[in-house]
Length: 73
Image (tube, rainbow, N blue to C red; front, side, top):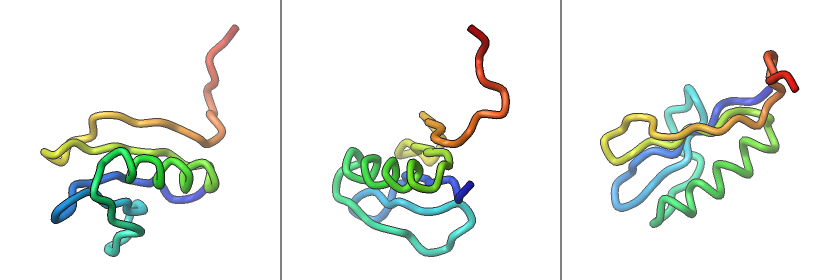
């Protein structure tokens, strides 16, 4: 399982950053573009996507890894 991918506010736009990384993976002018890029990385690495709002708080998350506690039924 790879690093979780975060979509965070960045000067003039939005950035994709792997968990624990100091440097950004990519910078985008629109949040939707950053989410698309981060989603592709999270799928490839079977990790989690965390989308932050302008205030920096996590507003949405999506998991692409193996769930250790999948729902029944």
